View 1: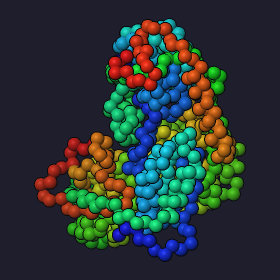
View 2 (view 1 turned 30 degrees about the vertical axis):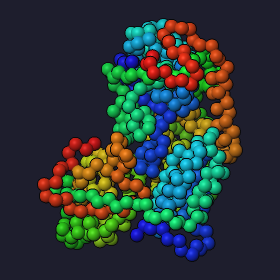
View 3 (view 1 turned 60 degrees about the vertical axis):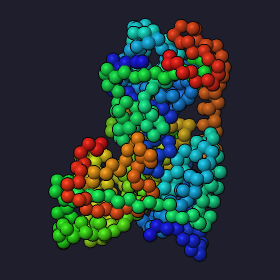
Length: 333
Length: 236
């Protein structure tokens, strides 16, 4: 079990997301940076979609109430465990009563705290993800508060890793360029709108959140002021309301929306977008479907490589979870 | 209404497009039309029933259905083909939609805009209630909030446009009108619809199966709640 001593600015429980209920209006939620969420899980030997804690901009302080293997991945923070500096993107062990503190943030916006076995909260509609708008999942559907206690699940068969992801795994500092697939409604926009969009730098607005980023920059002109009939809104959709200021839809987006769509950020770059904070810049580069798939496969290969190249376990202390591969242990760690 | 009949099919009146690298969308003409919506719902049901590998969500709207897939487990071309087959196969199965009846306490503190809608319609509050309950509505789409169903088509006389300034909080269970649409707020939320009443029925409950009372294509009727019916208290 772990205890939130200080919740930080916005810390929520997130797993792979609540898929399968969007036709009933239930948002997917899930991690803003799915790659960092997976790296954190990999480092502690969890299956990829175990629930982690998503930390936002200002980190929490977490007390471990039992010996726990844990890792923090994603945004760069100065971390300490019982006042000793701690590396990011590496599995570590905390003894009972140890205190994990987040200090200064130097890059990225969101970090993921994984514990071996996963954060255990009651699943809602098949997911542990916190959906803040629907007040569903996580702990009471809300951000974590000081004093909250969270159970840790049973560890799986894989070992915690004794290595760290390579240089490819770097959160953006101050801004990022992301790729997107233009369309599907080019005729809704002025002739030069796409060029204007890809040649501009936008700023992530102050009223951005897990639902979406409001982008400040040049207005993108619509050719057609007719209202748009609401339809499904995939992750990464770039909506343009009549005033011309784009909105990038993120993890907690509503399931449907009624604005013109300029394109969608590719799945491989959603995590990069998820590491941006209000005030950061963002620019968009058009690409083709093949590029999107290739980029995703490359990320997947890197994650598999990270998992495969280390068979050595972290030392014995803290975990007693060496079991047959693939077997789910019944004993909580 | 709402049943799919296989008319002599004219020239192709739909198209399929990629909407990102993890979604494919089938769309018809962008109109609020029961016939189009019935074809959307039928195509969505057929793709869902196909249990295609890597498909994560099938989301019907008024005139379009979007299929979400995991691009590492499913190929966009295959999802495309599944949608194409779903839209070109003539419908043979029975209409699977259900009819849902929602008891509503109209007016008073629970329907604070009822008199305004009556003034808009130039009739009595009782006549607004009569017209609101006389129609069997169709669930065109579920969206905006978990369990929020866009119901149509509202009698034009009482189809008052939404408020210019939305309320910061609309209580759960509120029944509202926005132009030709009506709906029930599943949870307390900001909203601009004209509130004419409230229901004690929980339209969404994550612990129930299915969690939402309204599914795409379902038929919905409202009826005045009998006096002494339970209040909406306790809903979240």
